[in-house]
Length: 237
Image (cartoon, rainbow, N blue to C red; front, side, top):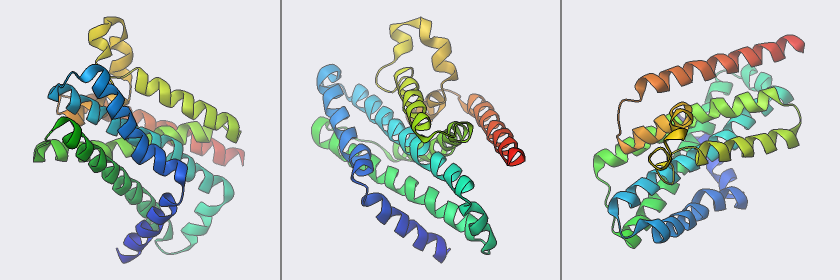
């Protein structure tokens, strides 16, 4: 446990030294909140809560798809995974530290955003609301890390990998209810939104409906794809 906590500490320090990651995790979400709340908020507490959870889900997706998933695959490619597995509990400890550091940083970014929403819009989140958001963060990190692994495993070209990851990320956030309920605006998008991996995460954070079955199905499919692609890569090598 001590090794995991120490590893988490160093992972956080590494993250804080990357200005781009720091900006898009802490500063840019505030900018998004201010823009959307002043354009469409109309002093609505309901929409303020809606956009807060949407932006937090975006932070989760960006950190998991374009960071955690790609890091894990890179470890597999450069042999770091084999090195870590030669150390007793080394691989598990390192992966746990990596994931915990991201969850901690995303939670801090979420707290920073919620504090800003309180100052600007006087929005108050209860204990249940905060608990649901934290659960959504943890599950979202797992789901989108799997998705990031699939993209990174499937593509060998780093430039193409980055482009497709960015493209998929934007498709996921804009064809979801992150910023506004697009299914209410245009029912045509209902099917797309229903299969979007972002949707159950948003439902968890917002305490909406029963999304457990959809979430389990998506996790099983993504986990099987990761296993299949990783196995094929190993056999080719």
